[in-house]
Length: 97
Image (tube, rainbow, N blue to C red; front, side, top):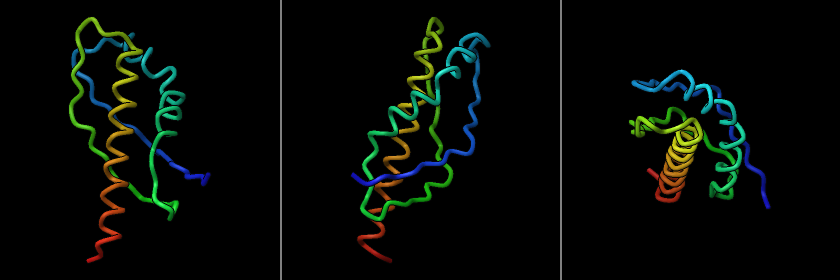
């Protein structure tokens, strides 16, 4: 099994209508959740990629949602966006200019 390193320098999240407590709870284990989900990423044999900027778009949660729900949604959306970017990069590499 090959190893693939993903370096996330920064995650910027704009939140509207979410309590500080929910945000704090969501951020507590975000790294562990990302590691778990990013472990499912499919990568090409080249073993390196530069996904650059990923826009996750809006994430809507119910007002009663807790931090675990927000954390899960952010990690899920980030993983899906990264997989789409890697797949697109691989398609472009195969097809060429």
